[in-house]
Image 1 (tube, one colour):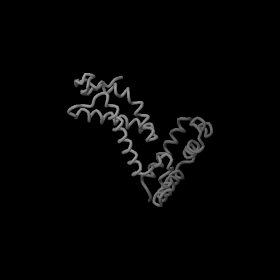
Image 2 (cartoon, helix red, strand yellow):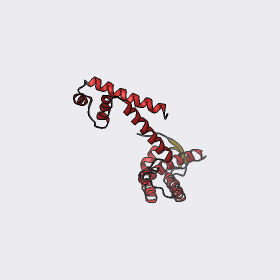
Image 3 (cartoon, one colour):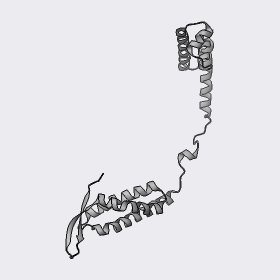
Image 4 (cartoon, helix red, strand yellow):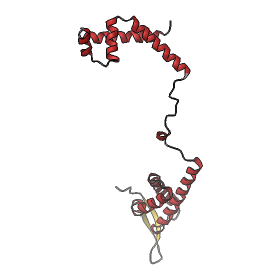
Length: 190
C-alpha cells in the first residue's frame, strides 16, 4: 500500500549535471522507517511514541522539502530525516520532563470519596423512609410478591406457587407496588 507522494529533488549525477528526479516518499519510508524507528525507540523507550515521531518526521521532511527552491536529493534524505527525528525525540523528552511523570488513571485508584456527602446521606435516608411508607401502605400479598421477587430473587412463577396466585396476577401486584413507591418518592416528604 503506497502513499504515492513524490517530491521533486535535484540530484547531482555522476557527470556533475543536476537532474530533477522525483523523490518517492513511499520508497524513502520503506527504506528508512525501520532504522529510524529503532533510532527513536533507543532514545524514547516507547514503541508507540517512536512510531509517532518517525511519522511526524517524515511529514515534516515532506513539507520542508517541498518549500525549498532546490529540494534535497535522495542521497541526503536519510541524513535530513535522521536530524529531524533526532530533534523531535529531544523535544518529546523535554516535554515529558517538564510535565513530569503521571500514572495512568487505572493505577491511581478511586479518585472520588466512596462515602456519600452529608446531603446525599440525608436524601438517601429520606428516600428509604418514603419507600418504606409506600410498602407498609401496600396490601400484604402485593408487598410479599414484590419482596419475594426483588429480595428473595424468585421468579413470577415461583411466587405464584408460593402465594397461590397466577403468574399474571403476581406481575400486576409487583407493578402496582412499584408504582406506589415511585408515586410516593415523587411526592416527597409530607
